[in-house]
Image (cartoon, rainbow, N blue to C red; front, side, top):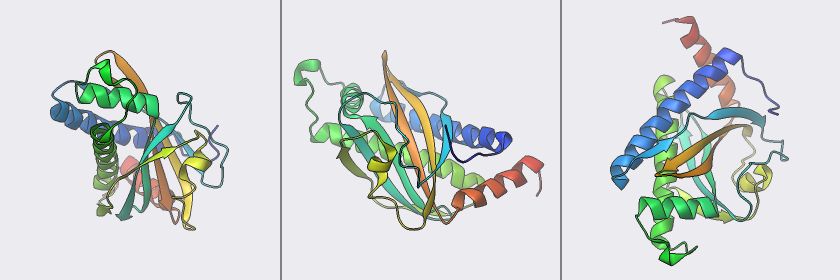
Length: 208
């Protein structure tokens, strides 16, 4: 269960904006891969960064993480998380590889997953930033292999002393008949989520 609660209307608007961002990400990936990519509407939970016991329900085994620092009007870390097995399947489908390579995850597969993570992060954060009239910039995305599904272990090296809130979006990536669970994590600094929530309340009230 989440340990930070948003007003239900605010939560619905966050999900609506995230869904728009994921729709843009799916369209961009479809154009890039020249095949249909679908990303389901996400579910969302919000946690305190101090809650290190939160686990992601992904496949057993190694976990892949694409992380990217976000700066400006929204500041923190954006992270896309996939199981290594799921990431391998997605990369092979995007690149139209055969099964001959087995479970290999080579440089071209890694580049495909970095690009997927980059597109997802840019689409979601960009959509949020547009609605909040915030100017943002991004560092270069990084791909890391992690050995756990506990959020505390997945993000321990990304959390700064200013990070206080963790937003978790869960969705499903679909290419052909293959479905892979994905997670988007947004680590926000300086109570940034509180500021964004206030902006969303203004939107909901229809104030200029």
